[in-house]
Length: 304
Image 1 (cartoon, rainbow, N blue to C red):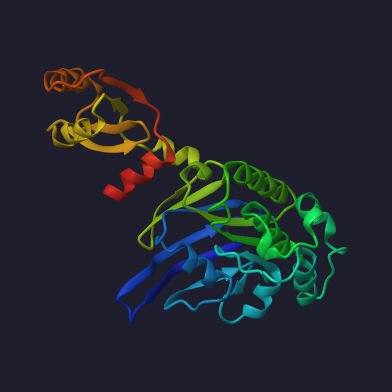
Image 2 (image 1 turned 180 degrees about the vertical axis):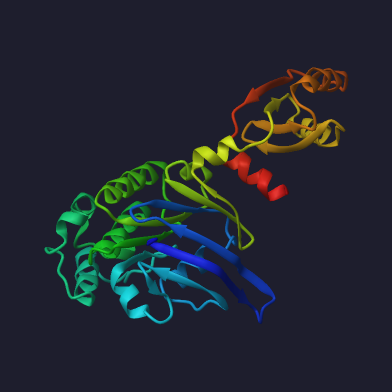
């Protein structure tokens, strides 16, 4: 039995004019760290709200640990931990008061499941008497995770947990997730950060309410069908325009300080392309072959 099973889920807003989730199906295996990867508006939050019984789908079915998200919503709420994208704890309560409150709701105590949250809680314990609203972004994140874990859930749903926090806090957070995974907790996490995709066991790439691809990060990268090149020159904007209008270039987009592009035909065309660009007056032109990333794969799937 899959930990999470979603079949043909559809969710619309504004009387059906906006399809937030468009016929989505996937499974999350028991003990897996599964990532929903996509930008704002991809449908990730709507999916999370349906799986945590906070939102009803227009059609389709979904189960969590075998429980139906509509008929068995009470059972599901007892076995999942949910950390929404927006910090939603009581800002006027202290760290300790928030934790005690959530433990009491689930008829448990901080002490009973302390071993599960110990590594995280130790980092915020010095601020246990500080109001939650006065914590930094990284500390709010750790407190929210503690509150989501306090009843020892079987599955953890984390909606964009690292958005708006610094790089160090992001790394610490993913280290914590790997530690929790080793303790047997199934984790479903959403993120707009493509670099975080490689930290998941499997990922679903989402755009405009639909899933474009589901596989391991390694397999998605391996499936990139063309040789990928990176280019830069003194006038990067003019280079972008010239590459996009070149009849031999299939696609081109900005990627950091470089432009990433593919050719309609393979590598043999690149020398001729370099010659054409030089003739157009590009200075300090550099073209090299590069390995595709998840972001390259995502952009290519979007263009289909």
